[in-house]
Image (cartoon, rainbow, N blue to C red; front, side, top):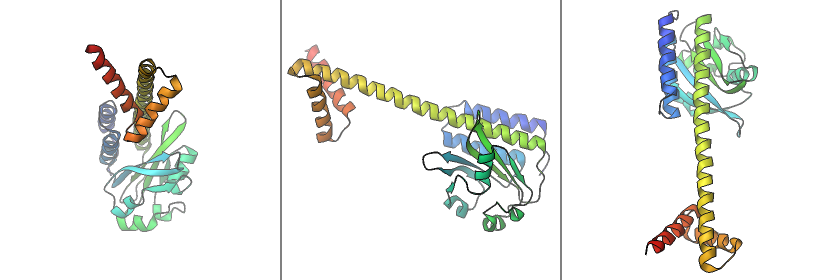
Length: 234
C-alpha cells in the first residue's frame, strides 16, 4: 500500500461528492464509495455497515472483494465486535493485526481471507452515528493520519448521502399521505352531496369498498372523483 497523495485524495472526494448529488440509488452510491475507497487506500476489502435502530443491529449494505461467508452474516448486534465499539465511542479504531485484537470476532474469516490491518471509521451526521466504514489490508500496515482523515471524510459523506435519501423517502411518504387524505376528503364530499349522508357514513362507504375490492382507499376515492368529473362533463 502506498501513502495517500493529495491528488488521489481530491479525486476520490470529488467523485464521491458527485455521486451523492446525483440521482443514483443509495445502494449504487454506497457501492461506488466502497470501491473508490478500496482503490485509493489500496485496501483488500472495504465495507459499510448501517444501523437499524428498530432492530438494534447493524446491516451490511455495501462491500467489495469479500468472501460469501462474510456476506451471509449480514447483521450484527449494536454492541458486537469492533463495529459496535466504534459506533459506541464515535471515533476511529485502527488495528495493526486483527488476529491479535481481542475484540475482533471474525478471526477465522480473517485468516481465510488474508485480512491483517483494519481501519474502522464511524459514519456520522452531526453527532449521531448511523453506521461504520471498515477498511482491511492484506498485510501489516500503519494507516497514516492523512488516510484516517480521508476515511473519516468519506464516511461522513456517505452518512450525508444516507440522510439525504431517508429525508427524500420521508418527504415522499408525507406527500403521499397528504394527497391520499385530500382525495378521500373530496370523495367523501361527493358521496355526502349525492347520497344525502353524513361524513362518517361517507367514510364508511369508502372504507368498505376498499376492503371489498381489496384496493386502497385512495384508489376508491380516485374512482369516485373520476366518476363525478365524467358526469359533470355530460
